[in-house]
Image (cartoon, rainbow, N blue to C red; front, top):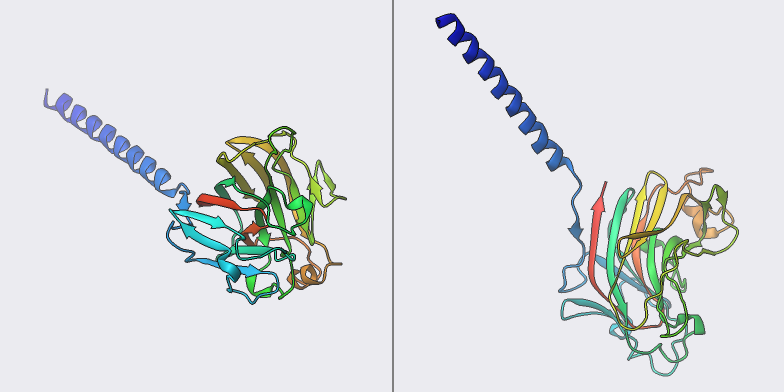
Length: 266
C-alpha cells in the first residue's frame, strides 16, 4: 500500500511540475509579445520635431501644428492668401526598422489659399525617411516612402493608400516601380470629416498598407535611388537597401486632425 501511495505522490508531483512549466512558458510568451505604445501624448508634441519648408528645423511657423482637445491639428490660418509651397513635416524622434504604425485621422475645413490643386484633402504618413537633421531648409519633402491620404469630395471616388516614393525605389509584384505612386489594390474612398484608421506594417523588407483593418496594398524591398543627392548620402557605400528610418506626418495644405498615433515595434 505504501508503495502505491509513493508512486501516486511522485506522479502527481511530476504532473504539477509540468503544469508549472507550461504556465511559466505561457507567461514568458505573453510578456515577449510586442505591445502597442501611444507616441502622441495628447498634450503637446514632446518626442516630435517640426520641419516646415523655408524655416529652420523646430520652428513651428504660424502655429501650423498645434495640440487642442487631445487632437494634433494642422492648420493654415496664419498663412495669408498664399500657401507659397510651405509644406511641412513633423517627425517622430526615433529611428525604426521593423514595426507597425496605426494612425487615426480626418480631413476638415478648406484647403489653404494658394495651395496646389492636388493639395485638396491630401496628406500622408511618411516612413523609412531620412533623419530630420538632414532635411535642408528649402526641401519640401524628405527622402522617404509614403502612405498617401486622399479624402473624397462627396461624389467621386478618390481612394487613399497609394504607395509613393521620394528618392527611393520599391518592388511591386516583383518589379521595381517606374512611377512615383502605386495606387492601392483595394480602393476605398472616405468622404466628409469621418475618422479613418490607417496602418502600415514594415517587417523584414515587406511593407503592407491597411485601412480600417483591411489590407489594401503590399510591396517590398525599398532601395535608395543613387541618382538622388540626399538618398546617395544615406546609402551605406554602394549598398542601396533601406534598412530603416523615421516616420513623419505631412502638412500638405489641407487642414487635418490626428487623435491617435500608436506604434508596435517587432
